[in-house]
Image (tube, rainbow, N blue to C red; front, side, top):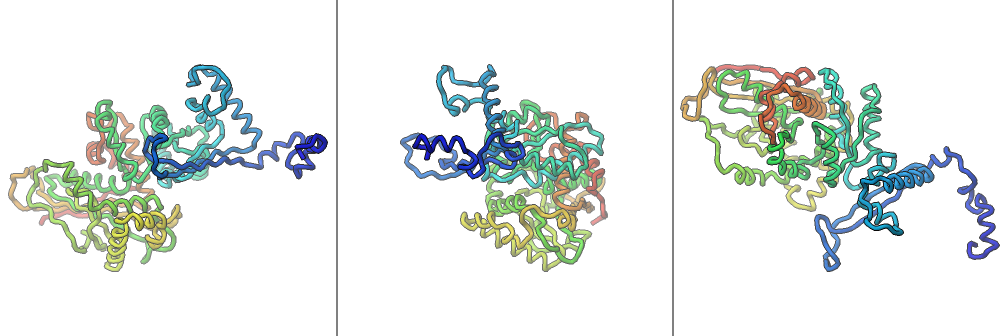
Length: 500
């Protein structure tokens, strides 16, 4: 009809009739607000490669991105207004010569996208995952602990999606019972260095909740030399698997009052009833980290050999590794070897009896074998609920998590009231057992991260003199971290000590 003058005039004169009521004069704002406009981009290319027209290999990667906004007229007005501000801003990287341009060549190297994001237009990469489950818990606990410690600290959250970050703050508002409208939101993407630099420049301390460390950890270690030069502390792994063990050993060493020769660490999950209930208790992100540990288990010894060519002197007698099931000291639980890259502290995982031990043992090695092959590794990552027999899934309910206590037992042996070195040839004469206890692994992890952050921000703490990449034991040994953890529902107890 648009090709003929008469019918074209009809189309223009009666838009409501010919559009089925979609178009009309001056639509009401409440009508336009009902609709969200989504622009989807599907891209294919070569990951990690800079190629040109002569490259003939097939594309190896894909990505999906979305731009979202509500009310088409408002989106148009926003785009026009922000574009105008970019054009009149003298600091933007515009083309050197004037001319007639499309939007792409004139705005590509400017901050147009960032300005649109700050004003309500959502840009997101959809195949990279959502705001982390652990990150939400850590933000909630950090705010609570900072308030109890009477620390006047401003904090913000960062991530790829403004909309999802705002949803996180909305959830936290209802849980904390207070307004968080002044908490800053920073757009940052681990794949865009400029956004990370901008985020880091706005903070004294960054708590990085991205994972697994297998994928995102290497860049952290690359900054050791630069961190050392600038007095920056980088402390990977401040959560459930590190802080209770390292600080438990430090607590045991301080209490022992002598020379502690050997330490065995047991981590035990204790349920409130005879079973493990129903529903998942482990987030899929935690499962993914566990899968990568199983996949790389055999490589850890090789890496340690390359890293530590010069061995430290051994105190005698040397700690023997218990490869068979055995009772946890001062506990009803049963323990077996736990896959860990650390050779100087023997780590075991605890269960509540022989049935659960062999169930966990067979499940671990079955999944460990599957993790060695790319096809079955992808199946493990894709179907966490199936291969974990329901223990892992999407966000576990808080009531399921609260059913469990996590108990870390530290069993140490040494020489009481003696300062000895590697030349001392006498047998150990004393033992000590300490326990670190808390409820809900995610809550414990959040407490550990939050307390670690507050200690690092405290100028009065005895931190290492030089910056660099540190383990938790190296950076927190002479600080008040244990005392702070004790004030916030993580118990450190000496359960027994005696002579051998």
